Length: 399
Ligand SMILES: *Cc1c(COP(=O)(O)O)cnc(C)c1O
Image (cartoon, rainbow, N blue to C red):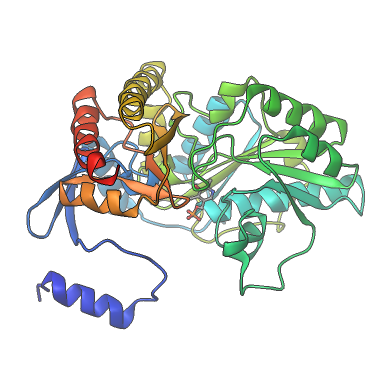
C-alpha cells in the first residue's frame, strides 16, 4: 500500500525511536546531485547523506557493481576469503601507505576498532599505558567508547558510567595537550578537520607538534577521517594537508558511496599487537559493501578527481566569502577545506536551513550556528551556483 506523507509522519511518530529531529519531507529517489520527494519536488543535495554520497545518487557504475555483486553473493562470513575484500583492502593500503586494514560497518565501529588497536598496542608497551586523549567539540560516534571519546558533554549525559581513561583537551591548543601527555598516554584521537563540531580546521604547526608529542611518548596518533577523508578535503586523506601521517586513520561515511561500511587502517607496528580472536565483525567488509567501496576508491582515488574537489571547494568558498562580505553581521566566518565547508552565523541556523529546503536546496546546520556544506564530490560550478543562489536569497530575511 502506498502511504501518504502524512501517514508516514504518523507511523514514524508511533513506531520509530524519536532520536532524530527530522525535516518534514519524504524522499523518494535521487539522481546525481539531486533528490526528489514523493510529491516530485526536486532538491539540490548539498548534504549528500552527511558526506556519504560522494559520487552522488544513482551513480551508474556504483549501481551496476552493487547489483552484480548482489546477484553473485551479498554476504559471506569473514571465516572465508573473497576477492572483492582483498581488492578493497589493497586499494586502501596503496592509497595510505599503511600496513593493515580492518573493515567494520560504520564510523563508530571504525573508531571503536582504532581505540581497541591503540589500547592493545599500548598495553604491549606497558600495563598502565591506557589514557586516550581527544578534543573538545569532537565527534567520534555513538557507541559507549566512541561517545566517551566525543568531547561534548551533551552526548554523555545519562549514559554513565562511561569507560575509564578518556581525557579531553581544547582543539588546536598544543600547550594543553603537552600538559596532559605522558608515558601513560596510549593514544591521541583527533579529527584533522572537525565536522560535527562546526567545521574547524587546525593549524599545520599544531598538527605537526601533535605528531612530535605522540612520537615522544610512543602514543598512537589516531585520525578520525570519517567525515574529512575520502577525498573531501581535496586530498584523499585529510592528513595529507598537514604534512604528517597518523598511526591509525579511520574512514566510513563516503567509503562505499552509501552502502554501510567503516574501516581502520594502521601501521604494521600497531597492527602487530592484534592477533586472531582479538577483534572481529560479522558484516564488516562483506562482499556487497566491498564491491561498492571498490568503485568509489577507483573513482575518488585519482589525481584528476581530487583536483576537481579542490577546485570546486575553492570556488564554493569564494562564493560563501562573498556572502560574508555582504552580511558581516550575520556571517561570522567561512572556513573549511575542499568540499567540507562551514559558515558560522551569529544566530542559530535551523530556520535558514528550513528556508533553503522550502526553496529546493538541502543544506545542514551543525553546532547550532554553523551552516555546513558536504555535497557529493562530483558537484560542478553550476551546482555550486545553484545552491549558493538559494542561500544568498534567504539570508537577507535573517540579517
Ligand atoms: C559521522 C561520524 C562518526 C560516526 O559515524 P557513524 O557511521 O554514524 O557511526 C564518527 N566520526 C566522525 C568524524 C563522523 O563525522
